Image (cartoon, rainbow, N blue to C red; front, side, top):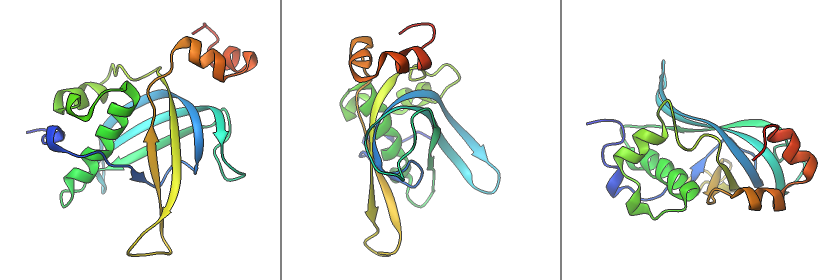
Length: 167
């Protein structure tokens, strides 16, 4: 039984604390699952912000590379699995039942098929119900964008900057 055991029955999850609130177009630069000493199993998405569609002065900047981490906790494995499922299903534009253990293993592997895809990401700060002074970031991942959609969404300068070898 691997770390993604139980993925088939997990519900999507959306919270974390890493990307600033806003609505973005971002390129997926890396997807990995690894062990961190003293912390445990972590899932990491590394993204480059290509466009800020909505946000404020606190939002991540165009060109900024950001990471989104999901931590596995033995007490609540479905929270971790749900966040991973939400990311994979959202980016691929597939239903939840199409994301299982094998898809999660492949997505976080050395040759992840998600690397290089461009997606939309909405990050909304939400206060904790139990600790109102603490906020969490809720994520919604959009389906990967086609070359035509990327060209329509980004300026010609941005396309040249972020895709020097073309789309």
